[in-house]
Length: 151
Image (cartoon, rainbow, N blue to C red):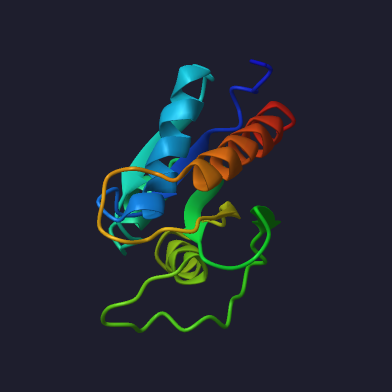
């Protein structure tokens, strides 16, 4: 599974709060991706997207954002369409479109961003990810590994 080209640097960003049970799916996915030791793949674990990420994202060709979801399929993996009209003003909320728009406006670079939403069921305070969410997260790891090896 290590066919990744040196010309395609990939970041996998696990978003979520590991103290909110299934919201820790992003960190779990990053730990599993790390086990594969893919060359040119970096994992980053954060609680939420923030504007400071643009400085780091400019070092990558592709970004995968893995995050828990309360709706949708068990795993949804979609490529984010670049939107040059995306507003970049926000005082408290950052999303993937805003990050990509800022990256383009400040550094003149477009990065391919993919969103991997993984359905969870328990977002109460706690450090244990439910078996339902673990099962879905393992499906997401396979989807992400397939993307990495085919990039």
